[in-house]
Length: 494
Image 1 (cartoon, rainbow, N blue to C red):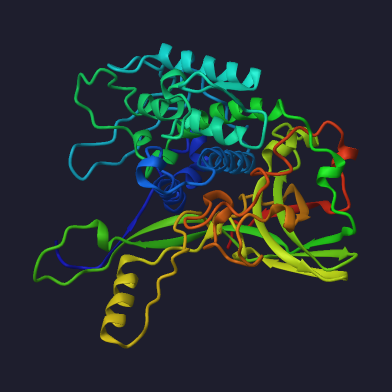
Image 2 (cartoon, rainbow, N blue to C red; image 1 turned 180 degrees about the vertical axis):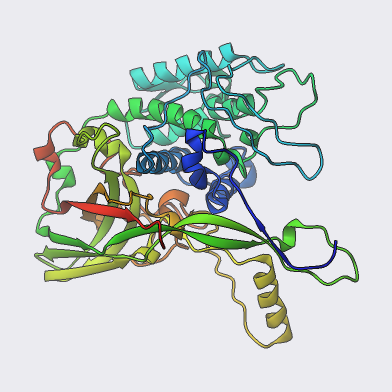
Protein backbone atom coordinates (compact mmCIF):
# COMPACT_ATOMS: atom_id res chain seq x y z
CA UNK A 1 0.00 0.00 0.00
CA UNK A 2 2.96 2.34 0.60
CA UNK A 3 4.42 1.41 -2.79
CA UNK A 4 7.69 0.39 -1.14
CA UNK A 5 9.75 -2.63 -2.20
CA UNK A 6 9.81 -5.38 0.42
CA UNK A 7 11.20 -8.84 1.11
CA UNK A 8 8.97 -11.08 3.24
CA UNK A 9 10.51 -14.11 4.95
CA UNK A 10 8.58 -17.29 4.20
CA UNK A 11 8.32 -19.82 7.04
CA UNK A 12 7.29 -23.46 6.90
CA UNK A 13 4.07 -24.59 8.55
CA UNK A 14 5.28 -26.64 11.53
CA UNK A 15 7.33 -26.10 14.67
CA UNK A 16 10.40 -27.78 16.11
CA UNK A 17 8.05 -29.96 18.22
CA UNK A 18 6.79 -31.61 15.04
CA UNK A 19 9.23 -34.22 13.62
CA UNK A 20 7.67 -33.75 10.16
CA UNK A 21 8.97 -30.18 10.26
CA UNK A 22 12.46 -31.56 9.57
CA UNK A 23 11.48 -32.39 5.99
CA UNK A 24 8.95 -29.57 5.39
CA UNK A 25 11.52 -27.92 3.10
CA UNK A 26 10.87 -30.78 0.66
CA UNK A 27 7.09 -31.20 0.65
CA UNK A 28 6.50 -27.43 0.84
CA UNK A 29 9.12 -26.56 -1.78
CA UNK A 30 7.50 -24.28 -4.38
CA UNK A 31 9.34 -26.01 -7.24
CA UNK A 32 8.22 -29.47 -6.10
CA UNK A 33 4.62 -28.26 -5.77
CA UNK A 34 4.90 -26.86 -9.29
CA UNK A 35 6.28 -30.16 -10.63
CA UNK A 36 3.35 -32.12 -9.19
CA UNK A 37 0.83 -29.57 -10.40
CA UNK A 38 2.16 -29.28 -13.97
CA UNK A 39 2.42 -33.08 -14.26
CA UNK A 40 -1.33 -33.36 -13.66
CA UNK A 41 -1.93 -30.52 -16.16
CA UNK A 42 0.08 -32.40 -18.79
CA UNK A 43 -1.53 -35.75 -17.92
CA UNK A 44 -5.07 -34.85 -16.70
CA UNK A 45 -7.12 -37.76 -15.35
CA UNK A 46 -10.15 -36.52 -17.29
CA UNK A 47 -8.40 -36.59 -20.69
CA UNK A 48 -10.60 -38.55 -23.11
CA UNK A 49 -8.40 -39.67 -26.00
CA UNK A 50 -11.33 -40.55 -28.27
CA UNK A 51 -13.03 -37.22 -27.65
CA UNK A 52 -9.93 -35.01 -28.06
CA UNK A 53 -8.15 -37.08 -30.71
CA UNK A 54 -4.77 -37.03 -28.93
CA UNK A 55 -3.26 -40.10 -27.28
CA UNK A 56 -1.38 -39.57 -24.02
CA UNK A 57 1.23 -42.31 -24.36
CA UNK A 58 1.68 -44.56 -21.29
CA UNK A 59 -0.33 -42.18 -19.13
CA UNK A 60 -1.26 -44.79 -16.53
CA UNK A 61 2.33 -45.96 -16.13
CA UNK A 62 3.57 -42.37 -15.84
CA UNK A 63 1.01 -41.72 -13.10
CA UNK A 64 2.57 -44.54 -11.09
CA UNK A 65 6.22 -43.84 -11.88
CA UNK A 66 6.22 -40.11 -11.19
CA UNK A 67 4.57 -40.64 -7.81
CA UNK A 68 6.79 -43.66 -7.08
CA UNK A 69 9.82 -41.45 -7.62
CA UNK A 70 8.36 -38.81 -5.29
CA UNK A 71 8.01 -41.47 -2.59
CA UNK A 72 11.57 -42.80 -3.01
CA UNK A 73 12.88 -39.23 -3.00
CA UNK A 74 10.80 -38.33 0.10
CA UNK A 75 12.03 -41.42 1.96
CA UNK A 76 15.64 -40.60 1.13
CA UNK A 77 15.03 -37.13 2.55
CA UNK A 78 13.52 -38.62 5.72
CA UNK A 79 16.54 -40.87 6.26
CA UNK A 80 18.77 -37.82 5.81
CA UNK A 81 16.95 -36.28 8.77
CA UNK A 82 16.91 -39.36 11.04
CA UNK A 83 13.28 -40.21 10.33
CA UNK A 84 12.01 -43.65 9.40
CA UNK A 85 10.46 -44.23 5.97
CA UNK A 86 6.91 -42.99 5.54
CA UNK A 87 4.19 -45.44 6.55
CA UNK A 88 1.29 -46.14 4.22
CA UNK A 89 -2.06 -44.88 5.44
CA UNK A 90 -4.90 -47.33 6.04
CA UNK A 91 -8.58 -46.55 5.72
CA UNK A 92 -9.53 -47.92 9.16
CA UNK A 93 -6.62 -46.41 11.11
CA UNK A 94 -5.97 -42.79 12.19
CA UNK A 95 -3.90 -40.42 10.08
CA UNK A 96 -1.07 -39.92 12.55
CA UNK A 97 0.35 -36.63 11.29
CA UNK A 98 -1.88 -33.60 11.43
CA UNK A 99 -1.34 -30.56 9.23
CA UNK A 100 -1.96 -26.85 9.67
CA UNK A 101 -1.45 -25.20 6.23
CA UNK A 102 -1.30 -21.58 7.52
CA UNK A 103 -2.52 -20.64 4.05
CA UNK A 104 -5.58 -18.76 2.86
CA UNK A 105 -7.57 -18.66 -0.32
CA UNK A 106 -7.71 -15.38 -2.20
CA UNK A 107 -11.44 -15.50 -1.42
CA UNK A 108 -13.20 -18.08 0.72
CA UNK A 109 -11.27 -18.33 3.97
CA UNK A 110 -8.37 -20.42 5.23
CA UNK A 111 -7.33 -23.86 4.08
CA UNK A 112 -8.69 -26.29 6.74
CA UNK A 113 -6.31 -27.76 9.32
CA UNK A 114 -6.30 -31.42 10.42
CA UNK A 115 -5.42 -32.49 13.99
CA UNK A 116 -3.13 -35.44 14.74
CA UNK A 117 -4.64 -38.94 14.79
CA UNK A 118 -7.74 -37.97 12.83
CA UNK A 119 -9.82 -40.78 11.33
CA UNK A 120 -11.28 -41.03 7.83
CA UNK A 121 -14.98 -40.19 7.74
CA UNK A 122 -17.74 -40.81 5.21
CA UNK A 123 -18.58 -37.84 3.00
CA UNK A 124 -22.02 -37.05 1.68
CA UNK A 125 -21.30 -38.91 -1.58
CA UNK A 126 -18.19 -41.03 -0.80
CA UNK A 127 -18.02 -43.76 1.86
CA UNK A 128 -14.96 -45.42 3.36
CA UNK A 129 -16.61 -48.72 2.46
CA UNK A 130 -16.54 -47.67 -1.21
CA UNK A 131 -12.76 -47.18 -1.14
CA UNK A 132 -12.28 -50.50 0.64
CA UNK A 133 -14.44 -52.27 -1.96
CA UNK A 134 -12.58 -50.68 -4.87
CA UNK A 135 -9.25 -51.63 -3.34
CA UNK A 136 -10.35 -55.23 -2.78
CA UNK A 137 -11.30 -55.52 -6.46
CA UNK A 138 -7.97 -54.01 -7.52
CA UNK A 139 -6.08 -56.45 -5.29
CA UNK A 140 -8.06 -59.31 -6.79
CA UNK A 141 -7.05 -58.18 -10.28
CA UNK A 142 -3.41 -57.97 -9.20
CA UNK A 143 -3.36 -61.40 -7.56
CA UNK A 144 -5.05 -63.06 -10.53
CA UNK A 145 -3.15 -61.04 -13.13
CA UNK A 146 -6.44 -60.27 -14.88
CA UNK A 147 -8.67 -57.19 -14.84
CA UNK A 148 -12.27 -57.08 -16.03
CA UNK A 149 -13.24 -54.46 -18.62
CA UNK A 150 -16.58 -52.64 -18.68
CA UNK A 151 -17.69 -55.09 -21.41
CA UNK A 152 -16.69 -58.04 -19.20
CA UNK A 153 -13.61 -58.89 -21.25
CA UNK A 154 -10.57 -60.29 -19.41
CA UNK A 155 -7.51 -58.04 -19.72
CA UNK A 156 -4.11 -59.47 -18.75
CA UNK A 157 -1.94 -57.44 -16.39
CA UNK A 158 1.04 -59.78 -16.66
CA UNK A 159 2.63 -58.12 -19.68
CA UNK A 160 4.37 -54.86 -20.54
CA UNK A 161 1.00 -53.07 -20.86
CA UNK A 162 -0.22 -54.29 -17.48
CA UNK A 163 1.26 -51.44 -15.45
CA UNK A 164 -0.31 -48.86 -17.77
CA UNK A 165 -3.71 -50.51 -17.37
CA UNK A 166 -3.32 -50.77 -13.61
CA UNK A 167 -2.16 -47.15 -13.20
CA UNK A 168 -5.21 -45.89 -15.12
CA UNK A 169 -7.50 -48.05 -12.95
CA UNK A 170 -6.06 -46.83 -9.65
CA UNK A 171 -5.97 -43.12 -10.51
CA UNK A 172 -8.64 -43.53 -12.09
CA UNK A 173 -8.30 -41.74 -15.38
CA UNK A 174 -10.61 -41.62 -18.37
CA UNK A 175 -8.47 -44.51 -19.68
CA UNK A 176 -9.67 -46.86 -16.94
CA UNK A 177 -11.04 -50.05 -18.50
CA UNK A 178 -13.83 -50.27 -15.91
CA UNK A 179 -14.36 -47.15 -13.74
CA UNK A 180 -17.71 -48.34 -12.38
CA UNK A 181 -16.21 -51.56 -11.02
CA UNK A 182 -12.74 -50.38 -9.92
CA UNK A 183 -13.76 -46.86 -8.97
CA UNK A 184 -11.24 -44.03 -8.58
CA UNK A 185 -9.13 -44.96 -5.57
CA UNK A 186 -6.54 -42.18 -5.88
CA UNK A 187 -8.82 -39.29 -6.81
CA UNK A 188 -11.48 -40.12 -4.22
CA UNK A 189 -8.85 -40.54 -1.49
CA UNK A 190 -7.55 -37.03 -2.25
CA UNK A 191 -11.09 -35.67 -1.86
CA UNK A 192 -11.69 -37.56 1.40
CA UNK A 193 -8.44 -36.22 2.86
CA UNK A 194 -9.24 -32.70 1.69
CA UNK A 195 -12.68 -32.70 3.33
CA UNK A 196 -11.84 -34.78 6.38
CA UNK A 197 -12.57 -32.09 8.99
CA UNK A 198 -15.92 -31.06 7.49
CA UNK A 199 -17.09 -34.30 5.80
CA UNK A 200 -20.76 -33.38 5.54
CA UNK A 201 -20.22 -29.73 4.64
CA UNK A 202 -21.82 -28.68 7.92
CA UNK A 203 -19.57 -25.63 8.32
CA UNK A 204 -19.12 -24.78 4.64
CA UNK A 205 -15.34 -25.06 4.89
CA UNK A 206 -13.34 -24.67 1.66
CA UNK A 207 -11.42 -27.60 0.13
CA UNK A 208 -8.23 -28.74 1.86
CA UNK A 209 -4.75 -28.73 0.34
CA UNK A 210 -5.16 -32.36 -0.82
CA UNK A 211 -7.88 -31.27 -3.27
CA UNK A 212 -5.47 -29.08 -5.27
CA UNK A 213 -2.53 -30.42 -7.26
CA UNK A 214 -0.71 -27.13 -6.55
CA UNK A 215 -0.69 -27.68 -2.77
CA UNK A 216 -1.07 -31.45 -2.17
CA UNK A 217 2.61 -32.30 -1.53
CA UNK A 218 2.65 -29.85 1.41
CA UNK A 219 0.55 -32.27 3.49
CA UNK A 220 2.38 -35.31 4.98
CA UNK A 221 -0.75 -37.37 4.25
CA UNK A 222 0.01 -36.97 0.52
CA UNK A 223 3.06 -39.19 0.88
CA UNK A 224 1.23 -41.66 3.13
CA UNK A 225 -1.54 -42.00 0.53
CA UNK A 226 0.89 -42.50 -2.33
CA UNK A 227 2.92 -44.98 -0.29
CA UNK A 228 -0.29 -46.99 0.03
CA UNK A 229 -0.84 -46.82 -3.73
CA UNK A 230 2.82 -47.62 -4.38
CA UNK A 231 2.45 -50.77 -2.28
CA UNK A 232 -0.41 -51.89 -4.53
CA UNK A 233 1.75 -51.41 -7.62
CA UNK A 234 4.60 -53.28 -5.94
CA UNK A 235 2.30 -56.27 -5.41
CA UNK A 236 1.76 -56.33 -9.17
CA UNK A 237 5.44 -55.87 -10.03
CA UNK A 238 6.49 -58.54 -7.51
CA UNK A 239 4.18 -61.04 -9.23
CA UNK A 240 6.14 -60.74 -12.50
CA UNK A 241 9.05 -62.99 -13.42
CA UNK A 242 12.55 -61.60 -12.72
CA UNK A 243 14.52 -60.44 -15.74
CA UNK A 244 16.83 -63.14 -17.06
CA UNK A 245 20.56 -62.68 -17.52
CA UNK A 246 20.01 -62.71 -21.28
CA UNK A 247 17.40 -59.94 -21.08
CA UNK A 248 19.80 -57.72 -19.15
CA UNK A 249 23.06 -58.43 -20.96
CA UNK A 250 24.50 -56.60 -23.97
CA UNK A 251 27.05 -58.76 -25.72
CA UNK A 252 30.41 -57.04 -26.18
CA UNK A 253 29.68 -54.07 -23.87
CA UNK A 254 31.28 -53.69 -20.45
CA UNK A 255 31.27 -50.89 -17.89
CA UNK A 256 34.81 -50.77 -16.51
CA UNK A 257 34.48 -47.96 -14.00
CA UNK A 258 32.23 -45.15 -12.78
CA UNK A 259 33.67 -41.98 -11.26
CA UNK A 260 31.55 -39.41 -9.44
CA UNK A 261 32.49 -35.89 -8.31
CA UNK A 262 32.06 -35.06 -4.63
CA UNK A 263 28.37 -34.76 -3.74
CA UNK A 264 27.56 -31.82 -1.48
CA UNK A 265 24.20 -30.29 -0.56
CA UNK A 266 23.31 -27.08 1.28
CA UNK A 267 20.47 -24.69 2.01
CA UNK A 268 20.32 -21.39 0.15
CA UNK A 269 18.17 -18.30 0.46
CA UNK A 270 16.07 -17.61 -2.63
CA UNK A 271 13.75 -14.73 -3.43
CA UNK A 272 10.48 -15.44 -5.24
CA UNK A 273 9.08 -12.53 -7.25
CA UNK A 274 5.45 -11.95 -6.20
CA UNK A 275 4.50 -9.72 -9.13
CA UNK A 276 1.72 -11.96 -10.46
CA UNK A 277 0.42 -12.83 -6.97
CA UNK A 278 -0.50 -9.35 -5.80
CA UNK A 279 -3.27 -6.91 -6.62
CA UNK A 280 -2.54 -4.17 -9.12
CA UNK A 281 -3.97 -0.72 -9.62
CA UNK A 282 -4.21 1.27 -12.83
CA UNK A 283 -1.79 4.16 -13.00
CA UNK A 284 0.55 2.87 -10.31
CA UNK A 285 3.92 1.31 -11.16
CA UNK A 286 4.72 -2.25 -10.08
CA UNK A 287 6.72 -2.51 -6.89
CA UNK A 288 9.14 -5.34 -6.23
CA UNK A 289 7.68 -7.54 -3.49
CA UNK A 290 9.53 -10.82 -2.89
CA UNK A 291 9.14 -13.84 -0.64
CA UNK A 292 12.42 -15.17 0.75
CA UNK A 293 12.64 -18.91 1.40
CA UNK A 294 15.35 -21.37 2.37
CA UNK A 295 15.57 -24.18 -0.15
CA UNK A 296 17.76 -27.25 -0.69
CA UNK A 297 20.42 -27.17 -3.40
CA UNK A 298 23.56 -29.07 -4.34
CA UNK A 299 26.89 -28.30 -5.90
CA UNK A 300 27.08 -29.14 -9.63
CA UNK A 301 28.63 -32.55 -10.17
CA UNK A 302 29.51 -34.92 -12.98
CA UNK A 303 29.47 -38.66 -13.56
CA UNK A 304 32.13 -40.30 -15.73
CA UNK A 305 31.39 -43.78 -17.06
CA UNK A 306 34.22 -45.75 -18.64
CA UNK A 307 32.82 -48.43 -20.96
CA UNK A 308 34.25 -50.67 -23.66
CA UNK A 309 32.45 -51.98 -26.70
CA UNK A 310 33.42 -54.63 -29.24
CA UNK A 311 31.86 -52.54 -32.02
CA UNK A 312 30.19 -49.19 -32.60
CA UNK A 313 26.85 -49.25 -30.80
CA UNK A 314 24.27 -46.81 -29.46
CA UNK A 315 23.29 -47.53 -25.84
CA UNK A 316 20.81 -46.13 -23.34
CA UNK A 317 22.47 -45.12 -20.08
CA UNK A 318 20.45 -45.25 -16.86
CA UNK A 319 21.74 -43.84 -13.56
CA UNK A 320 20.07 -44.57 -10.22
CA UNK A 321 20.77 -43.72 -6.57
CA UNK A 322 19.50 -45.33 -3.34
CA UNK A 323 20.38 -45.21 0.38
CA UNK A 324 22.81 -48.00 1.24
CA UNK A 325 21.57 -48.39 4.83
CA UNK A 326 18.11 -48.31 6.40
CA UNK A 327 16.92 -46.35 9.44
CA UNK A 328 18.41 -48.99 11.76
CA UNK A 329 21.82 -48.79 10.08
CA UNK A 330 21.48 -52.15 8.35
CA UNK A 331 22.71 -52.57 4.78
CA UNK A 332 19.69 -52.92 2.50
CA UNK A 333 19.57 -56.15 0.39
CA UNK A 334 19.38 -55.51 -3.35
CA UNK A 335 15.89 -57.00 -3.77
CA UNK A 336 14.61 -54.56 -1.13
CA UNK A 337 16.82 -51.70 -2.24
CA UNK A 338 15.63 -51.91 -5.87
CA UNK A 339 12.31 -50.28 -4.90
CA UNK A 340 14.16 -47.40 -3.21
CA UNK A 341 16.28 -46.28 -6.17
CA UNK A 342 15.85 -42.70 -7.38
CA UNK A 343 16.29 -42.33 -11.14
CA UNK A 344 18.87 -39.56 -11.61
CA UNK A 345 19.30 -39.64 -15.37
CA UNK A 346 18.58 -41.50 -18.60
CA UNK A 347 20.12 -40.70 -21.98
CA UNK A 348 21.44 -42.34 -25.14
CA UNK A 349 25.03 -42.19 -26.36
CA UNK A 350 27.01 -43.73 -29.22
CA UNK A 351 29.90 -45.99 -28.21
CA UNK A 352 32.85 -46.49 -30.50
CA UNK A 353 34.77 -49.74 -30.75
CA UNK A 354 37.23 -49.87 -27.85
CA UNK A 355 37.23 -47.75 -24.69
CA UNK A 356 34.80 -44.86 -24.21
CA UNK A 357 34.55 -42.13 -21.57
CA UNK A 358 30.94 -40.99 -21.09
CA UNK A 359 30.75 -37.73 -19.13
CA UNK A 360 27.41 -36.44 -17.91
CA UNK A 361 26.74 -33.24 -15.92
CA UNK A 362 24.10 -33.04 -13.20
CA UNK A 363 22.56 -30.07 -15.05
CA UNK A 364 21.83 -32.40 -18.01
CA UNK A 365 19.64 -34.77 -15.97
CA UNK A 366 16.55 -36.18 -17.68
CA UNK A 367 14.43 -35.76 -14.54
CA UNK A 368 14.96 -32.10 -13.66
CA UNK A 369 14.32 -28.62 -15.01
CA UNK A 370 15.93 -25.24 -14.17
CA UNK A 371 14.09 -22.53 -12.23
CA UNK A 372 11.34 -21.06 -14.42
CA UNK A 373 11.48 -17.45 -15.53
CA UNK A 374 9.63 -15.02 -13.29
CA UNK A 375 6.64 -13.17 -14.72
CA UNK A 376 8.71 -9.98 -14.73
CA UNK A 377 11.61 -11.58 -16.68
CA UNK A 378 9.26 -13.31 -19.14
CA UNK A 379 7.36 -10.11 -19.82
CA UNK A 380 10.61 -8.27 -20.50
CA UNK A 381 11.63 -10.94 -23.05
CA UNK A 382 8.28 -10.56 -24.83
CA UNK A 383 8.41 -6.75 -24.75
CA UNK A 384 11.97 -6.75 -26.13
CA UNK A 385 10.97 -9.14 -28.91
CA UNK A 386 7.99 -6.99 -29.84
CA UNK A 387 10.25 -3.93 -29.88
CA UNK A 388 12.62 -5.76 -32.20
CA UNK A 389 15.68 -5.50 -29.91
CA UNK A 390 15.92 -9.28 -29.54
CA UNK A 391 14.29 -12.46 -30.81
CA UNK A 392 12.18 -14.90 -28.82
CA UNK A 393 11.72 -18.47 -30.02
CA UNK A 394 9.31 -20.96 -28.47
CA UNK A 395 10.52 -24.57 -28.09
CA UNK A 396 7.45 -26.76 -28.61
CA UNK A 397 9.10 -29.58 -26.63
CA UNK A 398 10.08 -27.46 -23.60
CA UNK A 399 8.79 -28.96 -20.37
CA UNK A 400 7.54 -27.12 -17.30
CA UNK A 401 6.98 -30.49 -15.62
CA UNK A 402 10.06 -31.76 -13.80
CA UNK A 403 11.78 -31.85 -10.42
CA UNK A 404 13.83 -28.67 -9.81
CA UNK A 405 17.52 -29.06 -10.71
CA UNK A 406 18.48 -28.31 -7.13
CA UNK A 407 16.44 -31.25 -5.74
CA UNK A 408 18.24 -33.90 -7.79
CA UNK A 409 20.13 -35.13 -4.69
CA UNK A 410 18.78 -35.96 -1.22
CA UNK A 411 20.14 -33.80 1.59
CA UNK A 412 22.47 -36.40 3.12
CA UNK A 413 24.17 -35.71 6.46
CA UNK A 414 26.89 -33.41 7.76
CA UNK A 415 29.22 -36.31 8.48
CA UNK A 416 28.32 -37.98 5.18
CA UNK A 417 25.61 -40.48 4.20
CA UNK A 418 26.29 -43.57 2.13
CA UNK A 419 24.36 -44.30 -1.06
CA UNK A 420 24.56 -46.90 -3.80
CA UNK A 421 24.97 -45.56 -7.34
CA UNK A 422 23.81 -47.97 -10.04
CA UNK A 423 24.58 -47.53 -13.74
CA UNK A 424 22.91 -49.71 -16.38
CA UNK A 425 23.47 -49.73 -20.14
CA UNK A 426 20.98 -51.23 -22.60
CA UNK A 427 20.79 -51.62 -26.38
CA UNK A 428 19.24 -48.45 -27.84
CA UNK A 429 17.97 -50.35 -30.89
CA UNK A 430 15.77 -52.39 -28.53
CA UNK A 431 14.69 -49.26 -26.60
CA UNK A 432 13.99 -47.02 -29.60
CA UNK A 433 10.37 -45.96 -30.09
CA UNK A 434 10.42 -42.74 -32.12
CA UNK A 435 12.07 -42.13 -35.50
CA UNK A 436 14.38 -39.47 -34.08
CA UNK A 437 18.15 -39.21 -33.47
CA UNK A 438 19.41 -40.95 -30.34
CA UNK A 439 20.47 -37.62 -28.81
CA UNK A 440 17.13 -35.83 -29.37
CA UNK A 441 16.41 -33.81 -26.20
CA UNK A 442 12.59 -34.24 -25.90
CA UNK A 443 12.41 -31.02 -23.88
CA UNK A 444 14.43 -32.19 -20.89
CA UNK A 445 12.55 -33.89 -18.05
CA UNK A 446 11.43 -36.99 -19.94
CA UNK A 447 11.98 -39.63 -17.23
CA UNK A 448 9.17 -38.55 -14.88
CA UNK A 449 7.12 -36.39 -17.24
CA UNK A 450 7.14 -38.15 -20.61
CA UNK A 451 6.84 -36.05 -23.75
CA UNK A 452 4.13 -33.82 -25.14
CA UNK A 453 4.58 -34.37 -28.88
CA UNK A 454 6.05 -37.88 -29.09
CA UNK A 455 5.71 -41.35 -27.65
CA UNK A 456 7.56 -42.03 -24.40
CA UNK A 457 11.06 -42.60 -25.82
CA UNK A 458 11.82 -45.93 -24.20
CA UNK A 459 10.29 -49.31 -25.02
CA UNK A 460 11.31 -50.74 -21.65
CA UNK A 461 9.15 -50.44 -18.52
CA UNK A 462 9.77 -47.33 -16.44
CA UNK A 463 12.29 -48.02 -13.72
CA UNK A 464 13.83 -50.90 -15.69
CA UNK A 465 15.64 -53.07 -14.67
CA UNK A 466 14.75 -52.39 -11.01
CA UNK A 467 10.99 -52.73 -11.41
CA UNK A 468 10.92 -56.53 -11.02
CA UNK A 469 12.11 -58.87 -8.25
CA UNK A 470 15.82 -59.70 -8.06
CA UNK A 471 15.86 -63.26 -6.73
CA UNK A 472 19.38 -64.08 -7.84
CA UNK A 473 22.01 -61.34 -7.69
CA UNK A 474 24.34 -63.34 -9.95
CA UNK A 475 21.70 -63.45 -12.71
CA UNK A 476 21.12 -59.71 -12.29
CA UNK A 477 24.83 -58.87 -12.45
CA UNK A 478 25.93 -58.23 -16.03
CA UNK A 479 29.05 -56.59 -17.50
CA UNK A 480 27.00 -53.67 -18.83
CA UNK A 481 26.03 -52.61 -15.29
CA UNK A 482 28.01 -51.16 -12.40
CA UNK A 483 27.45 -50.59 -8.68
CA UNK A 484 29.52 -48.28 -6.54
CA UNK A 485 29.26 -46.55 -3.19
CA UNK A 486 29.01 -42.75 -3.04
CA UNK A 487 28.62 -40.31 -0.17
CA UNK A 488 26.45 -37.20 0.12
CA UNK A 489 27.57 -34.55 2.60
CA UNK A 490 25.38 -31.72 3.82
CA UNK A 491 27.21 -28.41 4.33
CA UNK A 492 25.41 -26.43 7.03
CA UNK A 493 27.85 -23.51 6.78
CA UNK A 494 27.42 -22.86 3.03
